Amino acid sequence: MRKILVALTIFSLTLVGVSMPSASPIFAADLTFTNKTNGLGSNYVNGVYVVGGTIYAATEVGLSISTDGGTTFTNYTTSNGLGDNDVNEVFVVGGTIYAATEVGLSISTDGGTTFTNYTTSNGLGDNDVNGVFVVGGTIYAATSGGLSISTDGGTTFTNYTTSNGLGDNYVDGVYVVGGTIYAASTGLGISTNGGTNFTTKTKAANNLGDDTLSGVYVVGGTIYVATDGGGLSVSSDGGTTFTNYSTSNGLGDEETFQVYVAGGTIYVATDGGLSISTDGGTTFTNYTTSNGLGNNVVLGVYVFGRTIYAATSGGLSIAQIPAQAGVPLWHQSIGREAATQTCPQDYTPSWANWPNSGTGGFVCNKAIPAYGN
Image (cartoon, rainbow, N blue to C red; front, side, top):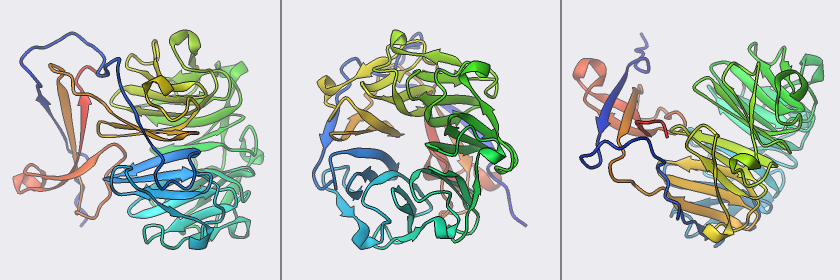
């Protein structure tokens, strides 16, 4: 019988210092980025993903991988089996790399040494793959010809289009949580039945900032949508209504490319810098080349632990979130069945005494600010 551990969650409060301050940002105004270019296939970085100590950078000339914090990268190209050297996005889970390229979805199980490329001949809606998301063994590929879903490792895809309710066949990004699919297209397509039917949320009907969407992220029941010219749109009621945040709230630009949320903090990759909010979007602090970014055009963002990775058109920029004395953190742990089981996004693998009736076992940990900012 399979023993379910993930339902058991514990919280412990760790205080850094002895005082209990009022709610305050965990970011210092002088947050500084170091820009990495050494060994990247191209300084134009479309996206970034981080697992453990390994950085995966999707560039215009290959997929670049670093195991030393970005000091050096090894670049993988069509010579390794990538469908195209222009990699739009990368996703990694369970040791498998999924690279969304201009000519197919390329998958590697050996760290990038070799890729198998999947195309329209495997059922993809289009060979131009804009984004990829993988959960529970199912691959979701956002293509220029629909949202393509595979349950057999990419061998075959079923493609979903406007005939299934999507606002447009061009899908720029996809996110999946709790069995619900969110497709960033012309409007936000939401499906609760595996893609068979989508309900599309729009500017006119649901107050999206813009109908052309670049990316979507969902956490804790809240939907965050990066729009092409209307800033960041946020919904806490399943997409029925959105609240919009723009340059008037401190966003670097209203053209946004990607959004990432961790520990209650919102990170938005914009055409004018990396914008960070610790109060739900009401105010943003924008970081630019003056803070060390390789370029003000930020195409993607990823946060792992206390490290921020910004994919810019001038390199991969990395910053450490400074520890702030007196800010308490909640330590959240969930059980996992074996050391080989992959932790959810934003969690790190560990071992603890509490699982299995106190006999101990493997867990996944995440530290979040106790005040949610």
